[in-house]
Length: 348
Image (tube, rainbow, N blue to C red):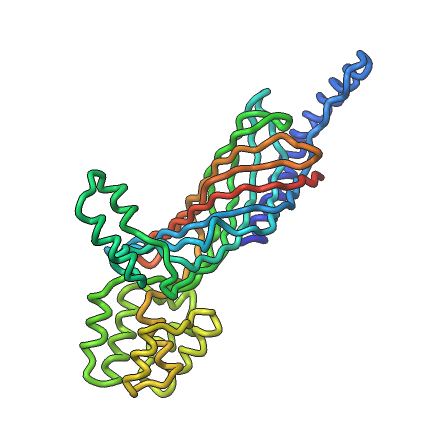
């Protein structure tokens, strides 16, 4: 998808080049006139493409909703500092204060905290504060936010997204610019989340009188809930479909470990102490009792709003908000990104 976006962006840049050339000619004429009059020449726009390397502080959240369940994954801390490499097409100035261009923005993310109700918190003091605050709240929305906490519940989601967005901006290259746009995106993410679906977990634990029955129920639960997608991860799909056969449960543990999705917790310890499973199998069951997330899809809708500064010593600043929305497997995945970036345009 990233290569396709680059090819498309270059093609559009070439198409814009003729229009940009005419603008250049007009600006060159105006520049010569101003030079003859003693004024400073006007800077001409770039013709083909602008590569924008820089650094960004980005905060990402992921909301997952569907099948009467929801989860919210967040980052640890205020955000992640990372490198930035955006690509822009030539800027076509419609008028003095309006213009358009294409923006290709790509970002990686890692989310290892989950926003959960305080009642499910691992901290007794947090649960106690939830009981105290649940008695009197005049505003349901603010009360709902106060009754949630961001914790490490042994879940994580990592991935990347690439957005190719037509931008309409207000301003010009020498002023502050406010831009907004909508377009497609490619989203790829993997990991697991905990929907805190206690009833389903209790059903899995109590429904199987023996090992095979329990593993068959666990396998059926994963496919029925839409957590496993054979088109995206055929290896995991095969292993989960045949958990009770041979040593597939242990192989599932090794596969999940290779994806960074195995973490010891109280559930794994309890399962291991039952004596029916070894350590690797207990970790695999603990992970599968959460909800696996696998997405590799084209988002038809992604948006961005930004405020960009004029160049100062060749460096621009940008404050932006946006993200893609993907619908897959009966769930809606909404990525919300907020980033503050400094970058150096390299224009061709």
